[in-house]
Amino acid sequence: MEKGKLLQEYKQSSSMWIVYGFFIGLFVLIALGGLSLAFLLPNEPGMGFASKFIFVFGLAMAVIFYASAKKKMDKPQYFLYENGLERKYKSQEYLMPVKNLTDLFLFTTGKSPAPNNLAFKSDGSDQWELISINHSGDIGALIDINCAKRSEYLWQEIEQGKIIKFNYITTATALKNSFTALSANTFLNSKSKQISLNREFLTVNDTNYPLADLQPIQRAMVKGYSIKDKNGKEVFSFSETTLWSFAVFAEIYERLLKNRS
Image (cartoon, rainbow, N blue to C red; front, side, top):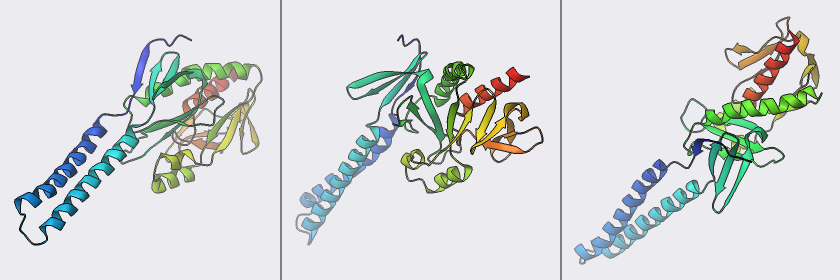
């Protein structure tokens, strides 16, 4: 498969090394300072022990920060092309067709008010891939091109009478994750539910809602977006961080409604 034009690079940010490098250098200086005390003040009582302690402490902290930096930087890199997302990690690399990327899951870590992590899966795999806060690049570009190609791919299945499914987490789960998450794994281990679409129905919690009775997606003040029936009753609500591959779902749902009008 031809890759096409390179659109985005998702590499581990070099700024992390600057931060860690500062602390590594600081503790190395502390270690050297402790070592020099033994030579500058050789006759001071207890100085031998103090200098050894400072040296060992500084050196140990420098090693800890270096190991932590290496662990954080030892992550796959991704390169977004027109026709695929290339994954490179150590000596291995492979290309994933953009239309086969599923469960695009946005979430926030750190102090940013906006989503800054994007997890996803390659079709047929349960293994999460993660473009994290520590990667460079615009995750919105991947969401947009996936929406265009994935929705077109799934539309063909809709036309064949198939049911397509989307995973989501509840608003309560999303809020819980925001307050209790210790790492990205907290989000990736979230228990999800499913909704489904076909040419006739939107299915939520095993209830089929005829598309003919539903309204277009509307903005909702707290929940983000909502789908209501023509009587104004809400049948499903979601946000960009609760519904996985939300852009693909919205594109197909609106297209189904448009085709019925």
